[in-house]
Image (cartoon, rainbow, N blue to C red):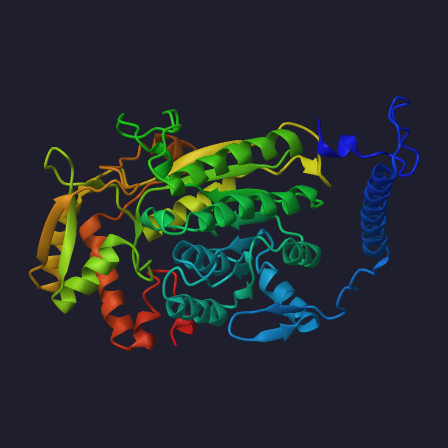
Length: 445
């Protein structure tokens, strides 16, 4: 029973037990309590009425959308948004790319734009890693005609404005809080972005008319402690080894829910260790390159049986082909205005290279390309969320998406190192052209 149950519902009308005999002190005490309760009740009622009567803040007639390094009035932003999202091909799609200034997001956005699709980017330019690299990617996109709205997927009002301004046929959802180890330092950021942010995007998408088809980035990390190799989409994914993996697994279940209830067409892509030019500085191949060149000692993990940790390294161009294949084969959502009209497509695919390589081999290749001997410290794999190996079974993606990776690790690392040396030597004009086969002369600045 709540403590409120002992307070009279109507102050002043509580009848005392007939056997109770009033004395002056008791009457005074009772009156004091009654006054106190009445005062509290009236105070709460007054506050409640004040809250109800206070006018809500009127919407700003000219909300400002942040567009990267500057702010543009909404009226002008809408012009830029519509221009960027307008397909240049009669058969082109209109695609919202979240995380557009990220590693995969930039490459995918350029590929879509290059083939004639309309592309609008959204990115919050957070500081998980050096935002200077994200700003450099943004400049590449702007040169190509892809406009990025600076904002967060958790800003439902902003998302609604974008969906009101543009009828998106597809959403390529690549925004996420990445990284396995960082989850131990800042777990809330993973829930905020990978779960709450995803739900927010799905909420706006399911209410759109027509609803867009959703393609989104899951992760190979969902396989967690699974020991069956190669990893198949049919394998169990209920034993995540990290919080990052758990949030991506949660995303897959959330996707199922919105597909089932609202008729959203949703395709999830489990990326396997993506690498290449313009990559993420928190990835091993990236900071190994940096530290080897500076003569610093690199830490290489080994498995409990003294074997090398292995990864199914997948080159960025191959991942982009898989993303575009998923988008092109995605069927239309079946809902309208938040109501499901019929069964909708729900898919999940592995996008890997299906050739796991020991990390020790990765180091050897970098030594060969850089012509520098690495200083190595080999230590046991810590319990920080990392797993011993990843290995993708890509049969399903090959069959349904026409996915076929073609870049081996040594060839891919050569392209990465060429870009890295150009970018960090200050030769931005040359480094901007390393969007292999995607960049055109107009994209080199």
